[in-house]
Every structure is written in structure tokens, then in C-alpha cells.
Length: 327
Ligand code: GLU
Image (cartoon, rainbow, N blue to C red; front, side):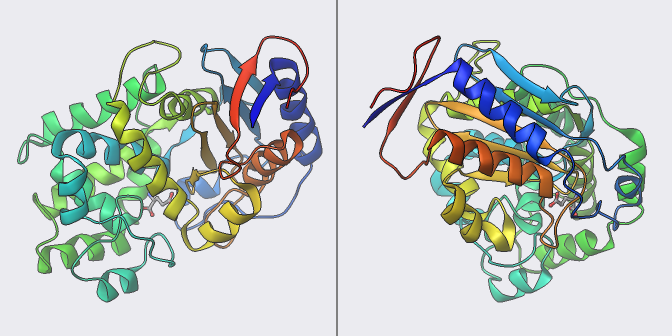
């Protein structure tokens, strides 16, 4: 079925979701990274990036927060681009773990693969593959440049978050060295861990995250800069990874109930992709037990339901300037 959604309908759905959930009180800021525990829990934003580059926003959409695990999507794309999908399948994998993002158990169970670049083990392995292997400075430049291109503007490092995460990332250090023992890390483990920690500590706004999502929805072309950031044939690869593990152990529940592939981060950000239609992002620091922002997930779920959209519906969605929905 052809579906036409007008910009007004989208705007109304975004505003409604914002109003409905701005007083939501459940969830708690991530505490295992001290910096995140102190972020204002009231912050809340939603942004949608349309194919023409227009951004529909509500709330604190220019507040800069830690991108955390959403950065895994960017680096997964970088290594997919550099090595090709088959090599990534071989060296990392693309499987759901069904376990928490930082699970050591997942790695023990699947020691032949770190599962997917979208959980900590696979993300550290992905960072280790970033070229040029062995050159920390150039690797960092490439990681940062790639995220900037996906978002359409620069993401600065939040120094305080980086320091806070660096002194508390013992679990991730264990993962990096376990990867080493399985020959599943492809550069120096401590350097790979540090680069991973740094990419998680980049500051992103909800609008930038929406543009990132919009670039994936636009099959690799950034809707704002109009630049091709990744080849269009990688779109189904990255969207399938997001759909498989984006909400960690809650991914099946999320996809079943909302119909939108989305990736969360413990900083409170969520990036959602409706391929061919739009990219959506939401942010609010309090997270649930699985590490997913409570307000942000409710807001995105509400917008999808309100507009009757679902990636599995078979509908072809276009965004129209005016007019109401046509079936
Ligand atoms: N930097 C965080 C960690 O590695 C990211 C986790 C997340 O956002 O899910 O623990």
C-alpha cells in the first residue's frame, strides 16, 4: 500500500508525544558511569529528519549528550565500508546476543564470534579493525570524521564523560582482553578499548542524531549535506543489525510492539530508522533496566502508532508537503 504522511501530521505526532511523556517519571540515569548519573533527568527531546533535510523538533533538541552505544552504528558502517559485509560477518558476526550490552557471558558462549558490532564486544572488535591498524591518531580521525559525516556536522568529545568512563570501564577492559584470548581483536587491546571509550563519549544533539538516522533512511545519502556517506547496498546490512540487537535483550519486544528498528545508548539517546521514509531520534537520560531511555522509547513508539507506521507492513511511505493520508 502507498502511504502519504504529511509534514503537519508528523509535526502533530511529535508534539503530542512530547506533551504526553514530558512528565513521565520512570527510569533512572545510568549510574555505572559517574558523569551520566548527574545529567538533568528532566531533559527530553524528539527530532525527525525528513528526506528533504527538514528537521521537525520538540524539546531540548540542541542539548549535547553522550552518544554512547549509538556510536556503534557509525563504526559498524565504517568497517562495513572498509572490509565488506562478508568479512564483517566472518570477523565479528551479526547475531543477536539476547543478553545485556556489556555481557561477558555472551562472549563466552559465542567465543568464535563477538556476535555483532552493536554490542560492546563486537564494537570493540570493530574499532580494532578501523584503518589504519596500528595508528591510533589516524584511526580516531577516521572514526570521528565518519560520525560527523553521518550527522552532517561536528560532534565534539565531552572530556568529562571520557574521563569518567575511562576510570570506570573495567568490564569493557575484561571484554577487550577476552577478545584477545580468542584472537577476535585486530589491533592493540588497550588502544582499541580507549578508542571505543572515546567514541562513546562524543557529544551529540537530538537533531544531529535524527540526521544520522535520516542518512540511514536515505540509503547512505545525508539528507542535509546531500553527501553520500556510505554505499546504498550497506543500508539493509546496517538496518538488519539495528533491528536485531538495537534494544539489547529487549530488542524483540521493542520491534514486535513498535515496528521500527532502533538503536539506544545509555546516555539516553535513541536513533530509529524507517528506511526510505525518515530518521527519528529521541533523548532523555533516565533509562530502564536494559539501558534504554524510558521517555525516548515511549515517544518513538507513540509516534509510530499514531501514524500507523510499521517497517513490516509492506507500505511504501512518502512524506508530503500537504494533504492528508491517502491509502
Ligand atoms: N560506553 C557504554 C559502555 O560501554 C555504552 C553502553 C551503551 O550505551 O549501551 O558501557
